[in-house]
Image (cartoon, rainbow, N blue to C red):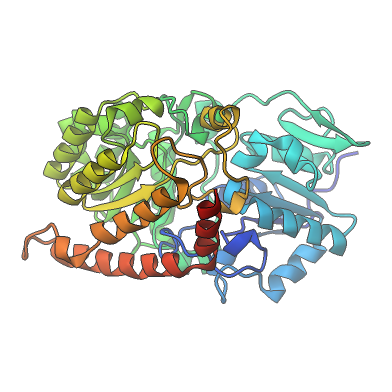
Length: 481
């Protein structure tokens, strides 16, 4: 007999990063800490549950609590009494997610823990040690079937579970079709999230047609790319605009412009709408710069900031990442994007196999001359990726302390550097890039105030990172390697 869906208490939660991966650990110091965004999976799953008739659904995002990142007494009370605790996690938040799951089991022996996300999808056996059910891949259909079946996982595609000491994996679930994807409801956000999020996060697509070896997107979705209909996207934009009309949009797709034709049509719809048309941002690949019409439409529609995965200006390093582009094309794309009017935030990965002390110095010099802002990331051997497999087979993984898997900490043994030296080099690169001596924009250009403010913010963040107990502990570890 199917469970009465009106009676289940369901709580969804995504924990923020915390120092040393502790549930009640201090807020971690990182380059993302000053950019409060809503969770991605939880708001959508919440909306799917409500649309399906569930009434007693609560989402928790401790990022917006006071103190930030900590569970409140009300949160813990809700978790204790909930029938199903749904946890979304990425690799860097697995330790605290596991700690929460075990705490919940002590408080409520009859409740069930269901966990999903990129890490559980990659390592379901590991996560079955502390969760009742692991949802692999997309969770919208799987979750509903699990709940209707009162959390019993047998026979449900896309789940893994442990029974009598053995882990069982049901067959993979087929990805949502573009029509099913478009029919999903707009994500649900509570009042606290709406008040505190910096931007309205909107995702128009899933997956990426490219195949970089370090990217967990490919391992999660396969090398597929699906996009919502433009009408569905416009409905979501309109919903977000009505909720917080003073906040801009962040198109958080891994590659917002992968389908250039459909993206142009969407931008035209935005231009002909009443939506606010300024201050938006998007994540794109460099191929965006090959289409002048596309760039012009993005600017007209209010996209002012581009988050660009440049990764490297070394051809040898790019080949190692299977990026599928050349250093020359990267450099030309950045120039075109800036000429089109975008603020270009470059995301660079430092420490690939083609990187040397000389090439890293050249990277810093190029970045100072050409990028408006930058993240100097380290290669992350995320579970499930080909990069992780390669580094494991070569014996180059330095640690599996998941809380360090954030792009700030050196996790693999580099070829042309000592691990400690590479870590300190990256910290110095940040300091140099954001030095006030290197302001790029000319006074009166309209960007100088933003650049100055960004550099002041960056200095504060970098100071916290340098002094952070977690970073200092990692530096001591690297020095001993």
